Amino acid sequence: MSQNQLVSVEFHGQSILATLNDGKPYVAMKPICENIGLQWEAQQKRIQRNHVLAQGMSMMDMVAEDGKQRKMICLPLTMLNGWLFGVDVNRVRPELRDKLMVYQRECFDVLFQHFMPQPAPTQRPYNPAIDYTRISPSQAQDIKELVHQVVDSGVQTFGETWNRLHNKFRVNSYLELPATKYDEVCAYLRGKLPPVPAPAPAPKPAPAPQPSFITKSVFISPTAMAKCIELRDDGSKQGVSFASNLLGEIQFALMFNGSAAHTRLTVSSAREMGNALLEVADAQAALERRAASAT
Image (cartoon, rainbow, N blue to C red; front, top):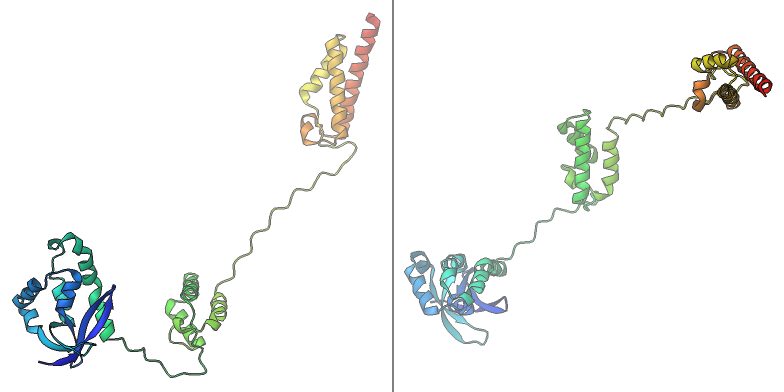
């Protein structure tokens, strides 16, 4: 029988009693059963019935913090989960189920970290020529996306792009790039991208027509001209009104230099415009004479 110093490990407000025997952690089983609410006598028989657990069970003399010795049945920490998961959650009282599941999920990890602390990571020798502040994960993603753009543009392959980047900045991996080199690396990769073509210039607006007193852009409808001539000898009131209106529209079109709103009044040449005006003027004068003689 061995004699060992008892260790109390806090777990969710309760104490788990354990000890080290030849550098190997053991857990006192009765206090754990009492913490969960399990009947110790029944669990002791279950441990003794299990061939593997029975072989690992050990009766130890433990020296408590008050100096008193206690005999306790212990299991190696490596067997604790085997015992815990052998307790069926569905067969314990409902009020014990939550606590049992907490012990099944977390107890081993807490005890393992207490007795088997992880060694500190090995640090590489300090090199004053290297900036050990690495780029952040988001900066690493930016660099990776730029490499993809270079490859997608057909400039270089992935292997060629990564190798040149690593050689230029003297790293084994882009994840080792110092944060102070982030902007320089991005500029280096962007410099490999082909230039973006300039946008096509916007079309220039058509030049405005030059003004003139009589312009070829003013026409008279042939139908209107024929009607005007037809009404030359018509002494009716309708004929006078039509001729007067047509003359007014032609003068209005000339005033606005043949704007788009009056394209129906265009004439093919200045000469035709003059003849059209004379035709209308003659028709209007004839109508006015007939109207005067009728009165």
